[in-house]
Length: 117
Image 1: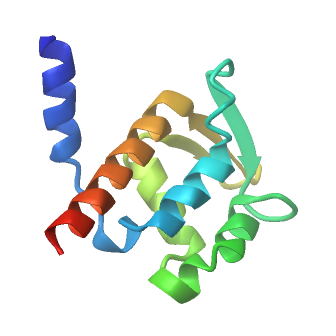
Image 2: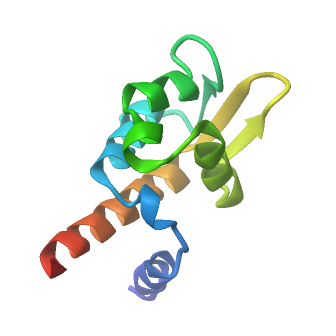
């Protein structure tokens, strides 16, 4: 029980910039990492090119709608330990459990905003 409570408190204290707290970003992350692939501890995705982080960010219009560019996405995910970024090899490797926790926390914060509006 204690581990769950402290994990929740830890998540509440995560610093996530406001521009990431929206349903579009949650959908983007969910599609990007295929949360259903829980059988795989790590998953790779190209940074640029076909079916890449950049292409999906453009599909979700993150730059236009929320001011989130590719660098913002990579920095958030890298700095929080959700992905390993391999710029020279043009791929990122997800840590699924960590990213799933991020998606859950953003969803909660979006819902909290809606309730308090």
